[in-house]
Amino acid sequence: MPLFESAQGQPLAGLKTVETELSPVWTMNFAASCDDVADAFMDTTDDRTPLVHPVFMPACVEVVSAFASLYAAGVTKEEITKHTFLHHFCDTTFERPMLASGQVRTETALVRVEQKRKGVFTGTKFSHYDADNILISTGYFGGVVDGLQGADAAKATTVAEVPGRIDFPPADAFDETEIIDIPPTAAHIFDACIRNPRKLKSKNSDINVHTSIGFAKKAGLLARTMNGLGVLGRVVSLLLKTRCNDDPTLLRRMCCTFSSPLFLRKEVVPLLVRIADRVTKEHGRVIFFQVFIKSNMQKILSNGALILRGNRSRL
Image (tube, rainbow, N blue to C red; front, side, top):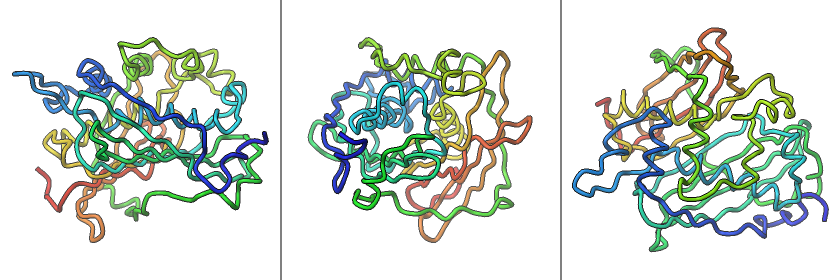
């Protein structure tokens, strides 16, 4: 079967529904990997059920399913190892908070495929439902798989479905800054915490440029890289703490573009977070952000935004 043939005219067939069994042990581990010990994610006093961190589903379920959609489209393990996502984006809309208990069902569809000059652009949609079949959140993951070819036949007939546009402010509007230090151990800790501690890791997880210098070099990288969603998790936690009184229920939508890899060697890497906290006409209060390596101002995350519920001023 030619690559992406089954994606023509409809969401990609053959992707199984993913059932995720949530537990406080797993979700608290994940929050800790984002350097976050907020009560919302950690407090189990009097048998309370903590909330799930906003980046948990993108990092633990969606990115895995995005790669699964490539496998289902005919991309091989060797091609996955050789090629990598460029300037991919993550975009999640939250219908309501997710509790760290019970089953969450995820429906996955490859909703956009287009051959670009540098590779194949793919867009994958994720719909997360609780045990009562009520929608909790909707996520999108998209980007160009660098160097991959074979999607020409799907270019004109795939279903296009992407989140609504956000207008970002000019560079000089980012008038506040914060610093986040990324330790050299962060990628290994994050990788361990995105795995369900009650289940063994899949063999496919061995293809990991974040923890294996060997695979990083096979992918043409200079060193191990910090998982972009790990950086996003730390940034979201920082912004919730400093601008939302550690209240994740205020979050309505979260998005960013992963602009370039953050290489990890043996030293701490300070990141500069530039912030524009604004009330917009279309979306209400939005915390826009960009993330740079402080030492050379290389951009790591761009087009970042946390859209909050209502027009609440800073708490």
